[in-house]
Length: 221
Image (tube, rainbow, N blue to C red; front, side, top):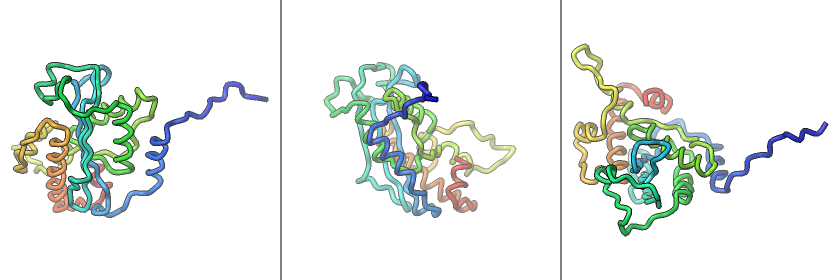
């Protein structure tokens, strides 16, 4: 009997298939061998449906080193703009900067990410914005493992009846705690750099507490 209702296999572009194939290579077991990508997005707002990504900043972090020269900084063409959010990210619609389409930006980001472990501050927001962009292109969600520096930072704090841990810690609070310059705060690349330094300092503290494996970091973060 012929099944006329059999679904045809979904065809995805080559760059997505290459991204998926990168996960056939298993991650190293040693933390110093793992490639992390620290990223941040600047957006028109906080609505996953209506708002859009304006810029993406990403940095490779491996073996305690931030590879700034290998960073990825993208500005996206978007019709939707929110004048209120301009006060935060400072990206003007009329600004003379090189912009690419959302699809090209996602293609470059996927090529940069590969199977790296993603680090972001309040990562749920960035991941949802990126996944919504992929969804608009008819693509599945990101496959990468993800860690949130806000959650990781909380795990470094002492548990005490006198000190109540907050639900969330801002990137400004981490920058102040670790004495990190905020000169380029609220730019995607600037925030990615602050997050990368904060992650290294947090990881060092966690190492002192015996957190030495990727699975331990993922459980916390």
